[in-house]
Amino acid sequence: MIPPGEVQGQRPWSGEVRGGAMPLPGRRRLFFMREANSEYTLRLRDFPVGAQMLFVAFGALVLVPLLTGLDPNVSLFCAGSGTLLYQVLTGFRIPIFLGSSFAFIAPIMFCVKTYGVPATMGGLAAVGIVYGLVAAAIRLRGVAVLSRILPTVVTGPVIMVIGLILAPVGVAMAMGKTGDGAKALYPEGLALSVALFSLAVTVLVAIRGRGMVRLVPILSGIAAGYLASLALGIVDFGPVAAAPWFAVPRFTSPTFSLDAILVIVPVAIAPIIEHFGGILAIGQVTGHNYLEKPGVHRSLLGDGVATALAGCLGGPPLTTYAEVTGAVALTRIHNPALMTWAALTAICLAFVGKLGALLTTIPTPVMGGIMLLLFGTIMVVGLNSLVLEGSDLMEPRNMVIVALILVFGIGRMTFSFGGVHLEGIGLAGVAGVVMNLILPHSRREK
Image 1 (spheres, rainbow, N blue to C red):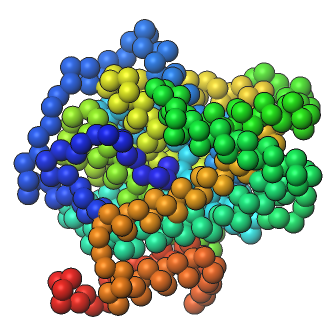
Image 2 (tube, one colour; image 1 turned 90 degrees about the vertical axis):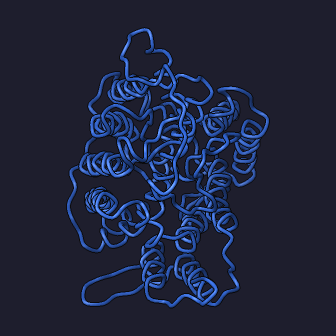
Image 3 (cartoon, one colour; image 1 turned 135 degrees about the vertical axis):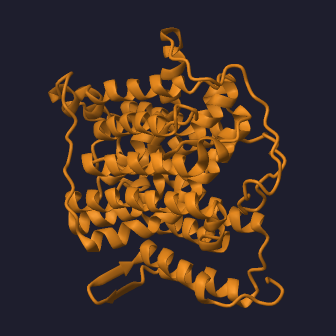
């Protein structure tokens, strides 16, 4: 999930990553302290703590399917099963939970509307394959290959585009309209009141919250907005009454469309960098060097396999969750088995039919209020990465790359050649990578 995983207040280790630059394992000696509670031990008594980890991730986890029209029960199942797969492929070493990725909201919404859900799922499954290819490149060439192909001057603007291109959707929903603004669902004044109340609670919890509460600002904002909607009488419980208690999630098989794949796959640039940040963050918390053991290539491969599985079942792509990393830091329990319990809990909840129906009753203005902050935050994350990296954006090469990525993405530029069609975020990502590879560096940069 964007923003990339960070744990506030944690001091980086020797060989820290500054300004988005990526460390080269072996060039510096890294110092890590081992914790006694960091070995994998599956114990029934740890179930409540593990279920709590799912609670921390729950708001963001179900928000993506609710925004994109996918089944939240399928997303729960994919997050749980994907996390278990990830643990197997990483040797049960890393206490990470995989949840729905926000980076793909815009391309999912576009592809569902343009190509249909099955073709969209095919594009998302292809993202998992891309993760695997990048993992193989890291295994063969080292982590530095990422910094050469995907420097901050490319990834920062791409992340900014993801947030900015979604801004009109959030505004429309906050005003009581459908995401495209074509139809009014609620009176504008009423909708704005609910949206701003949800937003205010989210901001208050994020800034002033304490302990575990501070880790769930999205969930807190949705809950507050939902209660306000109940008081105003704009919640329809009809779907909940009609839904059964037990129901198999509505899985969707993928079909593979080159057009949908070319729209979705380039967006994988941002989550790949995000994944790397997530591994660094959890390494800081637990005191383990996961870059070397089990290796970031195995971690990214695990994420890729989990994402491919989600695409084959009808769920959104998966990524590491920073809020869960924060919960691990807060509880100081580093046992990766906690994520096993969280994953099993998610799988069980996926078969509760009334839960999915209840989530669909959340009024549009509530989600719109959350999105106003969420999409702006995504943009700020990309901007902050450029600031921390410290590149001179007035230097012609950097200016060209950043400017064209932003204009191509926000302006929804389209490009077609020989049956290949790119537009929006996908075109912006591809253009950024190509320009970074072919444009010459200045003498000062060299």
